[in-house]
Image (cartoon, rainbow, N blue to C red; front, side, top):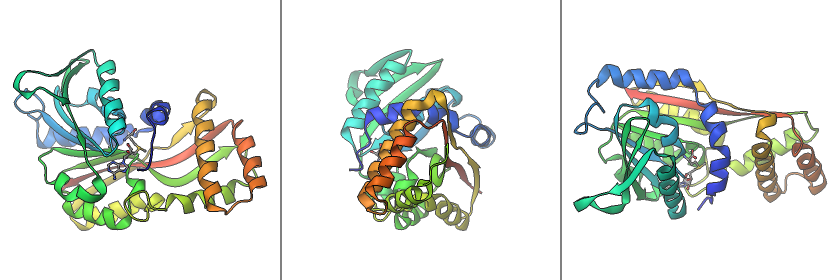
Length: 291
Ligand SMILES: C[S@@+](CC[C@H](N)C(=O)[O-])C[C@H]1O[C@@H](n2cnc3c(N)ncnc32)[C@H](O)[C@@H]1O
């Protein structure tokens, strides 16, 4: 497993939510209002959303309040601890929460209410590296993912794009841009080494890393999807010290594994980065819908 901890996901959640591109989210919402105006308006026609690599449920928390009143989310991850964290965190986040009752009683589905929205959440443990075709054959109105597609390989992306038949809304795909202030002489060599670590195998074959978003754009356009993209950078400042420090430490650990930067240079870089004033980390959001 890639080993994302619930603590790390919770630390990055506020920055993730801030960074999301509002214009693109609006375009996605307008698409559904225009093409399926009745969707999510009653309990019989819930808006069905499938979240790939859901972690502890941040994507649902970011989107649910702007989606129609009745929603059914399927949260998919291969890490059982993160699925369990998602369940607990969502139940705490909700205004009202209960496990699905009566005949359907199951600890893999919960019913929650939040700000007037009626949300059913199913939790599914699945290795998406192996089973993406089967997962995408399930009925859904929207496939979504956050901070996920830079982990996967180019070959997997081709499989994914070939199997996709509904709109896709994915946010926060890392694009390789990093600008830390104040600058440090090792910034360039550390970033180069970090990128070479980024494209190692994260369970899907060699990762596409910063190249993922362009592969998706090309593949989905070739399949006749209308693809729109907007930037969604993390813009971190003094209020994000803990996140910047965790990010720098994670990057330094990854870089150390590459042996591309000397230990002295890396220590000097990390020491400076623990006191950084600001940083920008580049991401893209993408919305693709069949023509
Ligand atoms: C960077 S985290 C993002 C989590 C969440 N979407 C968020 O925004 O907080 C990537 C997620 O992908 C999941 N993941 C990685 N490889 C996977 C695989 N092969 N199958 C299913 N989930 C996977 C990880 O467990 C993790 O939850």
